[in-house]
Length: 194
Ligand SMILES: [Zn+2]
Image 1 (cartoon, rainbow, N blue to C red):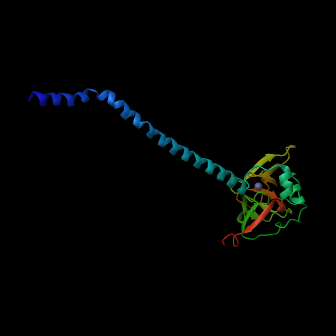
Image 2 (cartoon, rainbow, N blue to C red):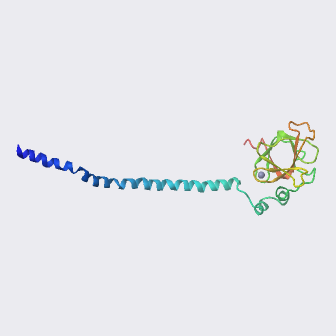
Image 3 (cartoon, rainbow, N blue to C red):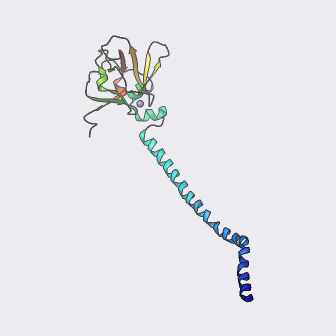
């Protein structure tokens, strides 16, 4: 009996060493946190790839600001004179002056939609006239001499023409957006469906 008690006591002694034994056990856990590290490294590559793809998408949409040299390269000389140098086409010569097709007029510089054909009216002034732009598409700036209000494409800053108020045209806004045809690119509602 005494012998078996001794055996019990001797087998129970390691229990008292539990705290020291636990150290090696803890140290074997250390390699595990290294796995999440390699995992996070793998994750950190993904946003990098996404960021690069984002830049490509922005460049493709043409939304990046362009220098005047870049505009000169992509626009015709007459488009550049009017859109970028605030020129004016001769009255009665523009392709959309007497044109009343159904669709949307886009900016000739950046292709942003600017006017619906349903807002176009015949003002008889020699340039296309609209009583209203698409929401947020048109910016207004007083001319330096304070005589007129210039209108530009909000997306690219291209010069469109001028806006006049209170002339008495029978339109919902009593405004006339007097726009150079060459600043516009008409897209027919028939061709945009396919
Ligand atoms: Zn534009």
